[in-house]
Image 1 (tube, one colour):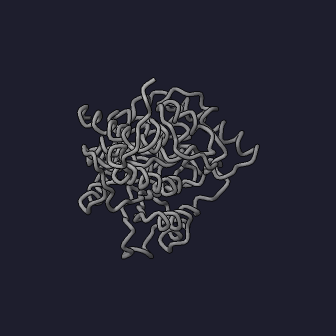
Image 2: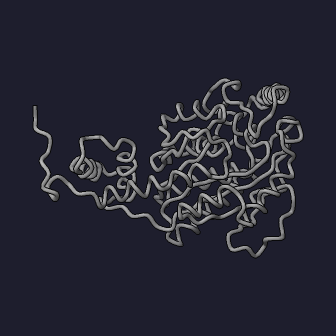
Image 3: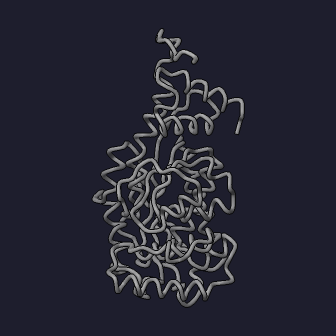
Length: 342
């Protein structure tokens, strides 16, 4: 990014009527916004949350507390406006798009809903406990589909975006992706997801350990994505890559969305320059992958819902950061004395 604008932005931030660094991460968001937009006066337009939904064949191996049918049921809930993300996105003034990336159930009831994008790669992935979740061609199709959705939003003026997900068993997919790509112990990445009990947790870990061995040859980002991923994770990966190309500010949500970001960042490391991290999830493994990415989350609310809820809750901080940079007085304009040199 432009080093000259970096210096000018930092000077503008430091000249605000406050002690140096006293607004902490709000200052960091303001700096990132200015760097992304290459301006001292960044603006926010048509903010969006895109939820990608997809089913996972590994759900049939008993790794989730909820049946696979819940994925489609929650897509219907999103489109009816009844989910947490609907409430939080509305509160934060963000538009919401719901994408069928590969739900097992055929979804036709909402074919004409203005916020629904029906683009399934297939009706769920295969069970990665016994075979790759998807083919290389399917993974590529999903990447391209996610990118196309972001391009369309950018064409409509959106310059700040967050991603959410829905998919029963997708914490299992994310755990395997993160373990393999970040070289972390699987035990550190596997959590209770939707709330499995102790017996379920032991079964989940055993299934995933076996799968990691089965797919030991999968090492590159795209091979790992195809071996373990869901269509929603693959589409998010493409969406992250395109959002960076479009020079959008990206608000990263929780555990699943960060697994997709990890894949994207190993394909194109520059994508991380466009990200702010909304929160630290309560899901095991999120802290580890954030540490791997050297990421500092804005909030710690013990969230583990997904859907993009953390991104929607953090967006007002982005609005505040832009307002701080654009509207707060400087020492000179306010006639306030600066700290004396000691």
